Amino acid sequence: MTEPWVSADVIAEHLGVTKDSIYAWIAKKDMPAHRVGRLWKFQVTEVDAWVRRSGADDAPGTEVYE
Image (tube, rainbow, N blue to C red; front, side, top):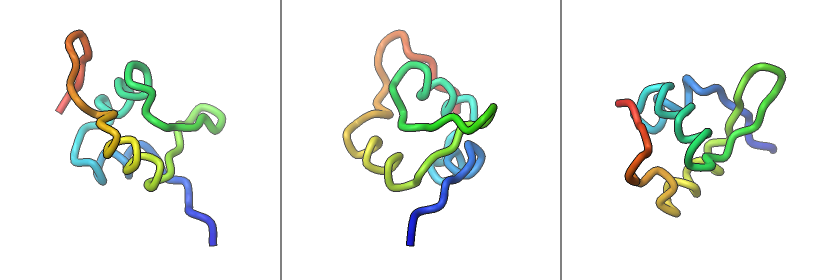
């Protein structure tokens, strides 16, 4: 069975952050996300692996909203 694609709302809730943080991470930290039309879609396993690789660590000059 393939993993379902989920929305920014679902990923934000999964990580306990705001959607603004998700969009900032996509733009500035190469968060794994895929455009489907106008929407961003995510696979939870890709995002979890990215977080484990320290993808969500704070760095100077990176805005993250919580």
